[in-house]
Length: 63
Image 1 (cartoon, rainbow, N blue to C red):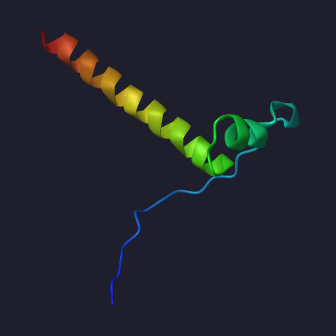
Image 2 (cartoon, helix red, strand yellow):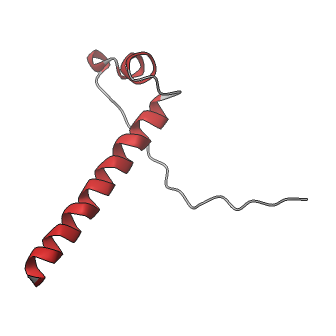
Image 3 (spheres, rainbow, N blue to C red):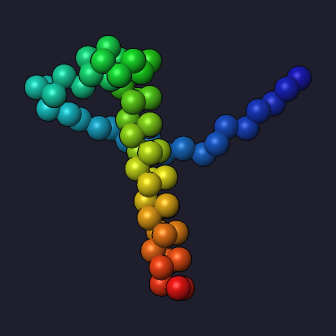
């Protein structure tokens, strides 16, 4: 028997204005399987960018 441990996660309810047509944008235009996957990817990219900026700022302070 194989047991896999899932990473801890947080859940949030997110609402969008209807005129944004988020489901159409996420699944049809951007080709994500779901809105959740689309939002996850946006957050992941933002967090990676923030980490890079923080590293760069720390390097600039040290130099």
